[in-house]
Image (cartoon, rainbow, N blue to C red; front, side, top):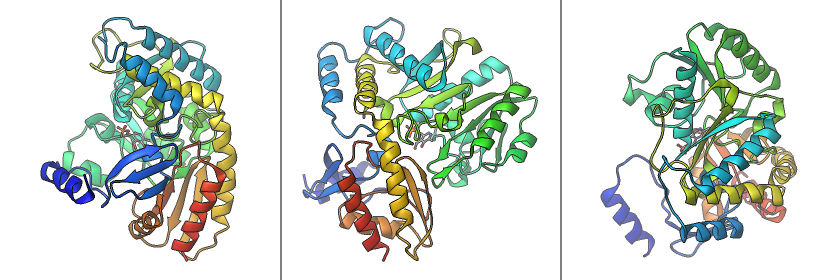
Length: 391
Ligand code: PLP
């Protein structure tokens, strides 16, 4: 099918929810994407942050193929070998990254569901109702996660959302201190705000949130759906700040391209009671096998270390561009934002014309989230294209 045929057919049945670029992507491998007309792009978006190990990594593919022939989906209410092994692998990640010796790992089907589970667990354990979240924060689009998401454009058409939620300025300890009260079940925060414009938070801020939550009996949820799985140069971005939250959520790349969310916490906080949460496909064997392969590849190919090294180099190179169109370059690891003086959409379009697929973050930030397996030579090409487009 060509672009016209594909786009017309989609538009015929489109719900209207997510706007499309005028391109039909039909194939991907490693760090490359191809459209229906055969045009090749360097993927600087890791698809939408979910391809940290690259597209169709052979280890992930082999795991999916093997498991697809054995058992694709299973009952939540029975044990399963792949889920058991995956839980142990995930627990090992949390032990190594955060020092959690004994942790509960709840699988779901997306980032927003990982946050739903975290919010429900916080209410369930604390008996409190309220949440504190950050301005510019993004946590998903289902009703609970949307309630802690800040952007009014996403929220307003769906009010009333869950209550009470207080949004306070990011990186601002006083504002957080004023907002966390006796009825706060949890504070939810990103280590680098992704959709909100690629804003890294500061160690003093996260340490203060940790202390405030501990003192006031609220749980600290860190949403690592975009920052996790090596993206910022550590397995979890919390590690940059020696931060041990109460709950961590993962999504995107943890499923290796299959839909998965993860909500994890130290078991000393307690557990859900049977029946209080769950989903039909969460923790299915196919997805768990894919996710185990991702965890293996992350270690084998030292991808967090790679993201740290390449990310520091890329950030310095982009800061050196000195284009009049760029107001600021921010980032951590291979999560980088160029805040532009004008709108990002025409820049994205020109990058696509020159074979670079990047992301926006808000109206004026160009966001780069390449797969962590990307070669430095590819990034050199990307820098050259960005320099050319921003001339
Ligand atoms: N949280 C963060 C930080 C995200 O970046 C996203 C998605 O972009 C989500 C939550 C929602 O994840 P999903 O789109 O898988 O529901």
